[in-house]
Length: 366
Image (cartoon, rainbow, N blue to C red; front, side, top):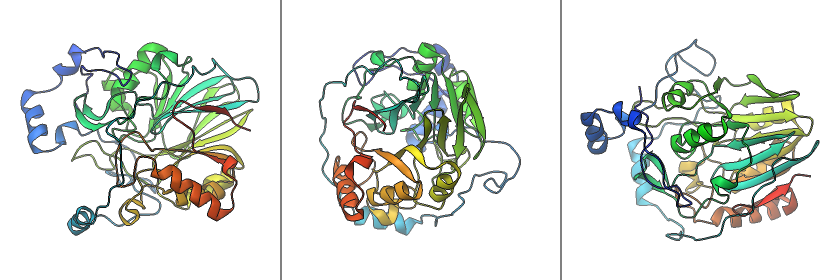
């Protein structure tokens, strides 16, 4: 089982993080040294154990549309041909305004916080997607990809959080430090794909529900969350690739349907989701970490792919996320926003139907 713990350090807004003694009690010194010197096996997540299905072979989860496994020569080609766009070492910016405590009946509001983290407000509920307030996306506070700008909304300015949805267990999407802080502060319900509950509960995170693709769970009276397929993979170390389920979510209520895709490549699942739940009032789609497309395309939508997904989903309004916070691929810090604008112009879709919000910016969804 993965040794989970809360380490020291600071949050992206400068507030000091607390330490957890119980955290370190689960980590053998030899395991830590081995992980640092020999890879990330120590940080691998627990495996899901359950019946075989059309997307689980008894050991690993599978995509409905498989993509070719990367070989060593592909990795060599990737590093030999890299053409990284520009990123600032640090982009300082003031936080956005405090979001409202809730929205009224029939209203829907979305606030872009950073990376794949948005605050979705609908039907009296406040829902966070893939929350990360930490200054690094990695297994330890000092080990991992460093953020390049502050979080758009201070943690202290969040309204009461009723639910959190987690798309998959990569470090930039399942951040244990942030989730523990949310659990201790608000006690929200937490939803994740099959197999992730063990990891989360071991870190002291409560009220966790694992969901399979197409499985529903009630959020409130008349409001339901459904896990839906994505085209990606999971893993936190060298021994747990695809050992837990990745997914997106559809939240349905009196105000309509909102969809959060999580990380995903373009695939038939977008059309299926649109047929089952469309027309969607809102779709939250990734537009970053897409270059080079030959390498990233199977698992990360480009801005052009996201525009195609917007159409397949029959979304009234879409919001682009997964850019400008952590440098994860060759696209520049704001290249996804520029590329999205070009893709919308080429498709003839009005820019007011697919937003690239500023960090901390919130809007009412029409």
